[in-house]
Length: 260
Figure 1: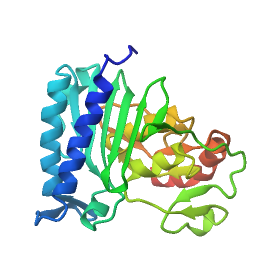
Figure 2 (figure 1 turned 120 degrees about the vertical axis):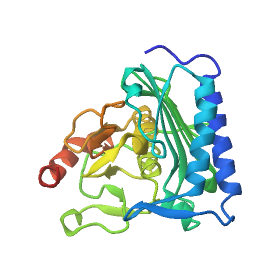
Figure 3 (figure 1 turned 90 degrees about the vertical axis):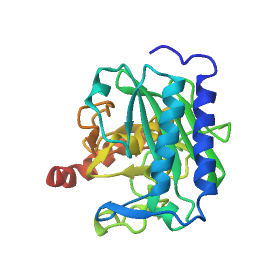
Figure 4 (figure 1 turned 30 degrees about the horizontal axis):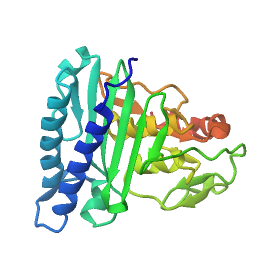
């Protein structure tokens, strides 16, 4: 993978900040909200930000394809080496409830892997960034995963752990899965795991941030995550401190097999 062009990373981050500022400015307005499917909320601000981001990002890098939660997927993206993978508001449920656990998520993917990612979380006063091979930062300060060798006692962002995981420790959980993954990157959690089909736009930027901070990332079965796939999905995401990844895969194995 070639390095990003000079100034490109800052330009992407500035676009994310513009979207975050717009979402913040509209937070108190009387905007429309509905459900795309039961339990899957969306609002007019999601769509407004999606249009803004597409205009800005496509002007910035016209050769890149487009994949976003709020845009009908177009298979022509599969022919592109570069791809924007965007979630205008990751954590819409928190946005609608006026909680701070949401972020604008933008990843630039090249040849199936993210090469730049930014999470702009204005309600938390946080900007998370990573560039492939250059580390990860929060508000410009380098971050790193906290080493852990013992699975029991691992910290998991969760509203409540099932009995099978009672040996783990629940910590605060923002609605945004991208921000939960970023918690592992910053050493504020040790493990994030899902055992369901999930979309690339939910995790692309955060996965790079976690990788660059020293975390191990995979699907629920421990296999490497790939992006710009035909379905734009992977079965689960697993992000851990390096020393507990194998144990986490083993813990999830039966659940993942049963649910896949």
